[in-house]
Each structure stands twice: as C-alpha cells, then as structure tokens.
Image 1 (tube, rainbow, N blue to C red):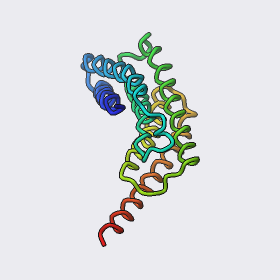
Image 2 (spheres, rainbow, N blue to C red; image 1 turned 90 degrees about the vertical axis):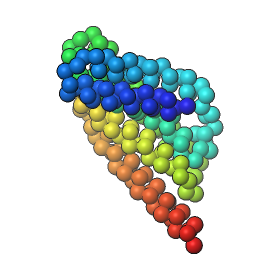
Image 3 (cartoon, helix red, strand yellow; image 1 turned 60 degrees about the horizontal axis):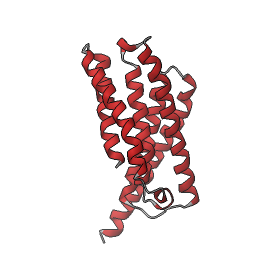
Length: 184
C-alpha cells in the first residue's frame, strides 16, 4: 500500500526537479499537488500496515519509512523552486519538509532497532526493498540539508549514505550466495 505514496511522491520529485530548471509555473503546482496527495495517502497506507512486520518482515517493511523519506525529498525539491522562495508557501513547506524528514529518521531508527533485536540473517529477495529506503533516507537528508539551509544535516546524511552503500553490498553478497547455492 505504501507504494501508492512512493509513486505519487516520485512524481512530485520529478515535477519539483523539472520546475527548478524550467520556467513553467504549472509544473511546480502539479508537483505540489502530488506532494500533498502523497502525504495524505500515507496515513491510509499506515492504517493498513501490519506493525508485526517490523518484527518479522523480510525487508519490505522498510518501505514504510522510505515512503516518508521520498516525501521529504519531494519537499526539498519544492523548497528549491525559485519562484516560491520568500513566500508564505515556502515558509509552510520548510517546516513540513523538516517534520517529514524527522518522521522518516524515526522510522529508520525503529527499523534498525528491530533488525538488531530480531535479526533476519537468511537471504530474501525482499532485502532489496530495505536498501531503497536506506538510500532514500540518505538522499532526503542531504537534499533537505541544502534546500532548507540546515547545514548540520549534511553529516548525518553522509553517514546514512555509507550505511546504505553497506546495505547494498550486503544484499548483493546475499544474492550472489543465494544464486550460487541454488545453481548446483
């Protein structure tokens, strides 16, 4: 269910990115609409999420937090729209984006705790759904740091980036091991 939010925020990221470099104002407004819709869909998805997956999920439970990360990235892209700088809209988007990032990081912490508390050491293809939110949280943190002018977020963003790279390598090692074991 979270993927409907991810897809909607993906459009907001795309629209916000293009609105930064293209002079058409309608694209920024369309991106803003996607951003708001994506945020509105999140509670609906969350209410349908089995919280037991935090304890027992095979990796795709991370999308619950990654959805907030791509939402924060979308907010960062919208903060960068030149026409909105210094406006009431920008002044509203900034704290909304920061809160969304904070919620994403909280989810990240909960999921890391759950991974440590209830380790799932067997390889599962759904582990790639863990890597995406980890990378998205890193990118969102770095993007929000710049767009919202919160420089101290750069260091945590860089740390999260290296954690995501490590998770990618571990998922790749797991995949290679799995393929090797099943090709005999």
